Image 1 (cartoon, rainbow, N blue to C red):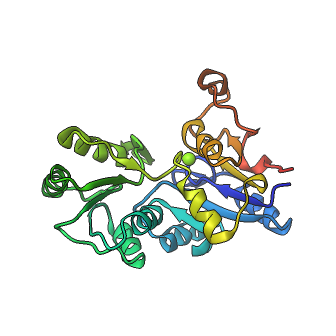
Image 2: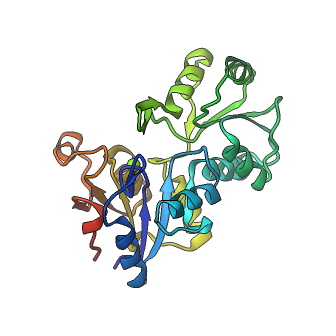
Length: 252
Ligand SMILES: [Mg+2]
């Protein structure tokens, strides 16, 4: 029996700036049935609190403790694996705040280069990160998403910034976001979740459903975002459940 549902955000609960019809009611229905609800996004530009705020403003009730986002996960990963090491950020203030909260010192002369989407990217920042990587710094990224959707169409995602640095440094970034099961390890530790009673609900086979498989939890694909039903056969990634949208979500 499922006791915990982890929701992806974009493509699952909203698409761009539009909430999926019935999403708020679906979350409410699960909570009333005693199912714990969490949110997991690879996006690293906001803090956990910032993401909770964004969701609440969209009419999707959420608190900071329910949010697991790229910035928080990168900070947790660095704190756990490279204690007391300094990090140089190619990213936005949300990443800096989460690193600070995890007691990771942020510096120009650093042992780690931490990358997420940076909509204020400059050549200078890229050059600094490149030089650190050439000197042997660890290379950590929230995600390698090629693009992200906006009302003006798709825009270059965190992956396009990671790609620039991988190309120049000839190093490969270690990606912390889905499908890496690291988030579930953290959630298990912090929340005491267990595999058999947890489902990941998302719109992408290669990230959300693969994350569930890597973590050993159940998966539900919703068809409101990127992945189409036909791709299940093509990609040979089979979710446990498929729903047209979160509004139709029912859990065993
Ligand atoms: Mg998504």
